Image (tube, rainbow, N blue to C red; front, side, top):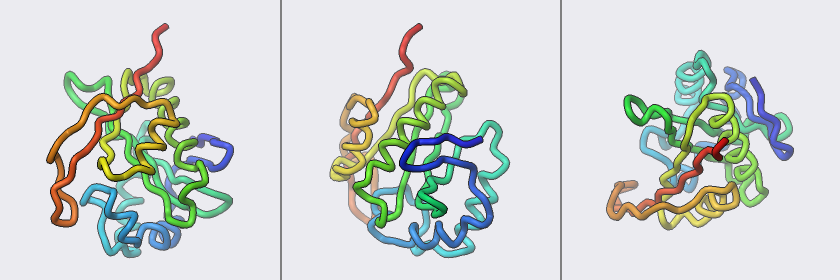
Length: 173
């Protein structure tokens, strides 16, 4: 399954993407805005382990962000469970080379539409760090609304961080 975004293509990860992942993901500035399960430094073994963990997802929840032929980043959904099964958290990253080009906004829009239309989700949310202005802009341009502030909700690189809660809700019938 592929999602065409104009400026990029979203497609399932392939083993051949490992070198591209390492090239773009092994960057402290990328890592500083992601969860700790995203390793730093990021090596080839990490890339292969990640790809193996997502290639058999059905339905697909994790996509490579491909610019030209370059796997430049990733985007994915983590669906909720039990009473929160109608919601999913969206997470994303793109390599520094591609910052500021509108790629992530297009990718977030495409995955959000996919979540609503193909996965029948009612809500997609994100938890960017409050000092990650670029991610906040992406979410706002993609139509997400700020719903709240989570004070002292995370620790990254030894620092206590605040997060915003942003969400998009599926339009009614």
